[in-house]
Image (tube, rainbow, N blue to C red; front, side):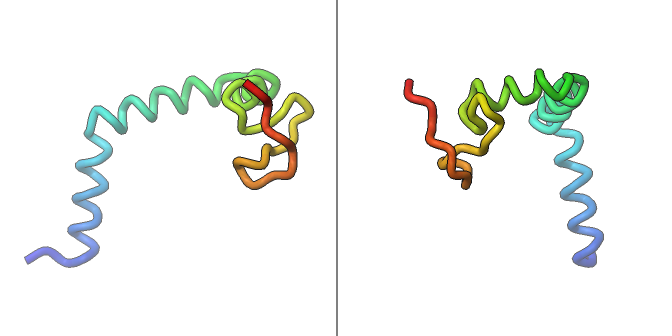
Length: 68
């Protein structure tokens, strides 16, 4: 019988080998290579931040969300 630590380690190892993990890792690495300005632009495009760099209400900030 595996210990709790051994089971958890096995689950993490299995996940890291999954296609989903590999895809997320690839996207994250690509994002991290972007400049600050490019990263902010990405966040603005999806509505996390507004054009002034303020967190929108939907994500816990006080800035109103951009109208569609």
